[in-house]
Amino acid sequence: MIIRNTPGNRTLARKAREAITAETGFKAVIDTEWNCGADIRIEIGTVNMPFIVMTSIEDGVFHLNVRMQPATLDEVDILEMKYRLDSVDKIASRLQKLVEELKPTIPVR
Figure 1 (tube, rainbow, N blue to C red):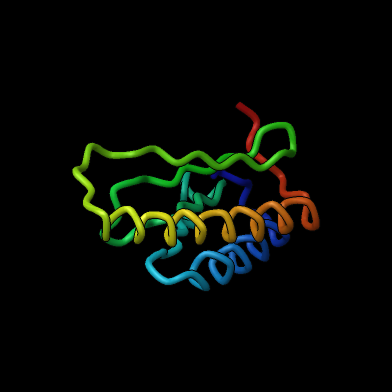
Figure 2: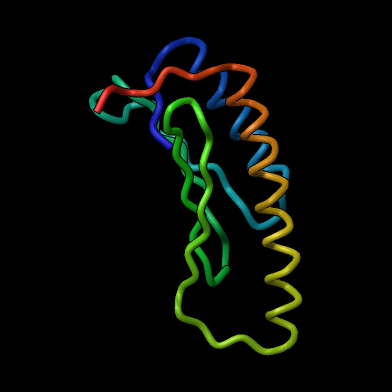
């Protein structure tokens, strides 16, 4: 997710970090120097998971997509995946709430 580097958006980035890292197995990757410091890039990093989490904001609406990576899963992996996807849902809910509350400024494309 790319947002403008403004004081309000830095608050969003800080709160997004808290929302993401609250779930085990996820880390916030936040770059406040994106686009020569004009923008902030917020990514959701995953640890040992067969999927990638992608986020964006379009027309003021938060979007989250999960892209599966090729993997072979056994029964234990599938149960672990369910737990991790439940965590993604919790992260998405928290980030959606933050976007609604803080109304971030996004870069013009």
